[in-house]
Structures are given as C-alpha cells and as structure tokens.
Length: 117
Image (tube, rainbow, N blue to C red):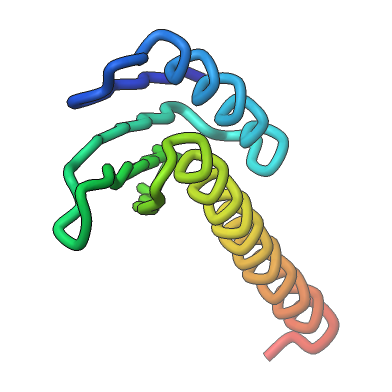
C-alpha cells in the first residue's frame, strides 16, 4: 500500500504530512486490497471571512474501484479527521456490498445444484 500526501499553500506541511499519513494508515484495517492512497491538502482563503478553509481530498485505489472523498473545515486537522472517518464508512460499505453479492451468488449456485433443470 502506497501513501502519497501532497499539499498546496500550506505553511507547516511536514507536520501535517506526518499527521495525515498516520491517520490514513489506519484505513488498511477496513479493506485489505488497497493499492494506493492519495491525500491532497489544500489551503484557501475563505470567501466568507478572512479565515482559511482547508480541503482534504482522499482517493483510494482498490482493484476495480476508485473511491474519493472531499471535506472542508476551518482547521487542517479537523478536515483530515473528518475525511478519514467518511472514508472508513465508505470502505466498509463497499466491502459489505461485495460480500453481499458473493453471498447471493453462493445461494443461487447451491439452489441450482439441488434442483437441476
């Protein structure tokens, strides 16, 4: 599993990069076939105030699927945490859906063996 972290307009990038890698490594528990994780951290001036908005984009490559999450917060740590939490839920959903399909296929083949046509 490769982890790529990139940042645009961030002042304290090395510390934030380590924090993002640490959080994103934990996603491997939720799906075993993750090939690549890309994290993009972007800082932009908020259009409402003079504060900064931080975007955290996470893209995960799984064989046969590409998953993507984008999250916006006023602090970079909160943006990373929120995006990782949403990605956990998405990974679990994708994995359960695959297991459900395999389960249905197994039941159909079992019934087909019992009742040959």
